[in-house]
Length: 511
Ligand SMILES: Cc1cc2nc3c(=O)[nH]c(=O)nc-3n(C[C@H](O)[C@H](O)[C@H](O)COP(=O)(O)OP(=O)(O)OC[C@H]3O[C@@H](n4cnc5c(N)ncnc54)[C@H](O)[C@@H]3O)c2cc1C
Image 1 (spheres, rainbow, N blue to C red):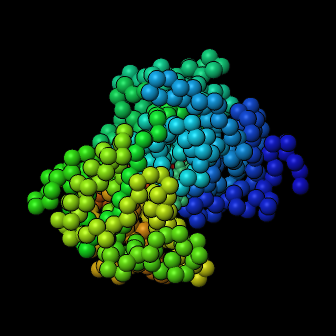
Image 2: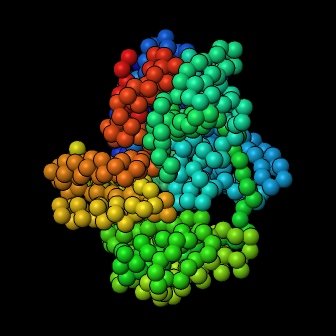
Image 3: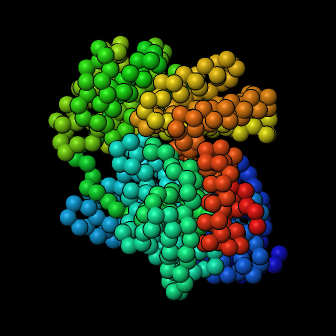
């Protein structure tokens, strides 16, 4: 086969895995490239323009909305563009410069040894820094620390034509909804931000826009549609001195929901108050615990998860970071008192008092989506068209119980197999439907659409953290309307006039 350039290879069977990401969807591609420097990225873009091909950007391909799944054209895989600078400390914080293919695990390994902490924690620690920025990844600790956006101080973004925007935080702001940005070649790009208002809750749906916003935020969560992130300055804080986590198993779901509200500092009748807020509050439904019980029996990979007492119904996880162990212990004691009032005893808990002890608990958390994926893979062998149906929606505080009972009512009415788990502190529970047939898959999809409509009516978001990718395009339009989607398209056209970057992400491309 013809070698197009040293950097671009024609797509061949040896690259098969790059057609997929963790959404388990598969695409197609004509070319593939693994640049290791920004200059190489720019060269690939020039060559892609000559070949008149579209480009799909990939980090570590752990995304679950098919954002990195190519739909023809060239795969630009950044997994070999790795590297971290030395840490630059400044009083109570520090900064590190990362190249996009660096994995979160690699970043953590370097900084934690020196006593620093990067809080974004999207469960899947093999995510790349570029992918986390492009997706504005969140995770359990977002409840306290915010999403990736809050920890990015500078970005370098290569645009579709190879020009570069270097954007330190605090230097370029929109005026209302209009803005201009100057590229490194001295070109000024003038445009308008879309006019929609984002709900004031955890959301990763569509471009981040606000009046007078810092323009760096436009490129965090843009899902690779506006440019390619080639470098980022990340903000670090000192590693928390004390890190305590507690899984509480409760006798029923309503007790778990009450515990969540109590842990958030809300008043719940007849439940003792909890004074300090955790950094994370996570939820595991009865079905999620049952799935883990059976995965533990079936797969050796799940052996590390501690045994789950058959009497345990629902679980809530809380984590506290503090300056001293005594402070964290005090908070944990208050949560245990609240849990006792809701029917849980000390024997119904797993407690970890440092990072090492928390590892099996984190493995337990990670194991839920992993177990779902394995089961969906099994089903897929029989029914190829089946994929996981995973919701990622958040609602305002007042709708927490309403949204959980809506999911439960509809799922049991239709007899679907499912689990519910996730970031309940942010009223953000993932429902994963595990279809047993194409009919159930179709039914699950229609339920998902119905829920999205309800969630939008509640003032919620159709995607709290995973983004829109290619799988949730319809939901983005449902949330903001067709006019807003047209405005997003116009914004993309400003940065990428040929609409070549990540076609199919966020919205269908109209050239
Ligand atoms: C088991 C499991 C649990 C997960 N839990 C969470 C969770 O709790 N919270 C959460 O937020 N996510 C979660 N995820 C999703 C995923 O890990 C995150 O979205 C992660 O940020 C993706 O990073 P990545 O490097 O794998 O990106 P990829 O999957 O490779 O790409 C993601 C998107 O970013 C774009 N992109 C990648 N790199 C760049 C770049 N350098 N420049 C421009 N665009 C780029 C891609 O085109 C794509 O649109 C989970 C995934 C799994 C498998």
